Image 1 (cartoon, helix red, strand yellow):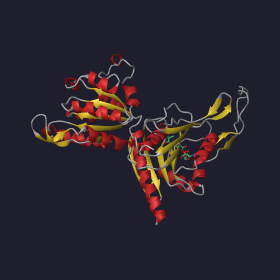
Image 2 (tube, rainbow, N blue to C red):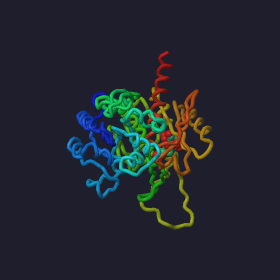
Image 3 (cartoon, helix red, strand yellow):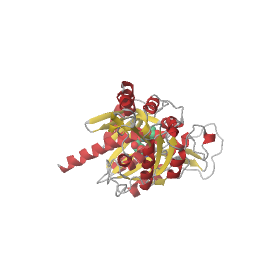
Amino acid sequence: MNSHAPLQNRNILLGVTGGIAAYKSAELLRLLRKRGATVRVVMTQSAQQFMGPLTFQALSGHQVYTSLFESELGDGMGHIELARWADLLIVAPATADFMARHCHGRADDLLVAICRATDASQMVAPAMNQQMWLDAATQQNVAQLQQQGIRLVGPNQGSQACGESGPGRMVEPEQLVEAVEAQFESGLLQGEHLLITAGPTREPLDPVRFLTNRSSGKMGFAIARAAVDAGAKVTLIAGPVALETPTHVHRVDVEQAEEMADAVTSHLADATLFIATAAVADYRPAEVAGEKIKKGATELQLKLVRNRDILAEVAAQPNPPFTVGFAAETERLRDFAQKKRQQKQIDLIAANRVGQPGTGFDADENTLSLFWEGGEKNLEQTSKQQLARQLITVIAERMDEKSRAEDS
Ligand code: PMT
């Protein structure tokens, strides 16, 4: 789907820091727009010593952002809005100082504050004097940024503006555009159709009340987004959540578990991968009162009946897609997850601990333990978006392995 125009309608935030290579970023911006991306630009104070914001404003068609203080931002895009808006943040050129501040978690100017606040993939194109690049502290910072999941592009070797020669030249704009395109099109799930459930369900008791849970949909939406980036066609069956639909995702909104089950059934035909991230209610009230239930006796008995198990139904199809379930557990994560995987006959289960702050339901971060037949992998605590990318990589490997085993 994205193979011909991976940047079409993508939101790219271009960060420009203070180096002589800043002039190349104007060309980078022009090329990104030419390929269909919407680009907004953030400049640091020192970047403005090398290039004027007006140049980037004219080329991007948008105001250029230079200050952390929203009153100076004009069009209402504060650092949080910009962080949320971006599908990708690319910083080019990235100075040694910017990288040092970024990897140490600083948030004292607009660009590093956005780096903290965004869930988007981040790319950095360093540009500096060769001695500065080779300096031990810079190299440590580079390693730390990479550990944080930030992709470094370059630098190249060659003659430098300061008259020296060596590593430190910013990668040329054309090469950077290729790297950006590749970022959106890892191709890991090229040709696959992902059907994914996300969010909670609501099981009505009467016209004004329902049973539900704390799922926000963040984990499932992050996976949907990572799958699109990996080249998949994505259909997202979403319970009631307050999240924006990721670009290129076909979203179907449902409320009750039985509606979610019906929506999955009707979209299953050409799905090659099914991921059940939703926190589906296992039970619903046996009867839904037609009028608001009145307060009366000191006790009210609720009779609940079982809902369909969507994940088990998908896995039991005659020719099922590669099926991935989640397990939300408050204890004995491994045992219960493995049991669920075996009982439901699914290819892979992603287990997360829930019921404690910081990860799981409604949190921005999570940890996952993945289990499949004959293997397992722990994914350390990080943002749900980073985890989603790591999960997609493991799923793609397992799908590959399964199809090779079936062919042989
Ligand atoms: O949405 P967030 O706030 O980001 O939180 C993410 C999450 C904690 C909800 C998510 O990571 C997660 O764990 N989702 C699964 C929650 C759950 O219902 O787990 P479970 O162990 O009860 O169910 C096991 C699996 O069966 C799940 O894949 C579930 O989607 C599926 N299931 C369960 C019941 C049912 N009737 N149909 C199903 O498909």
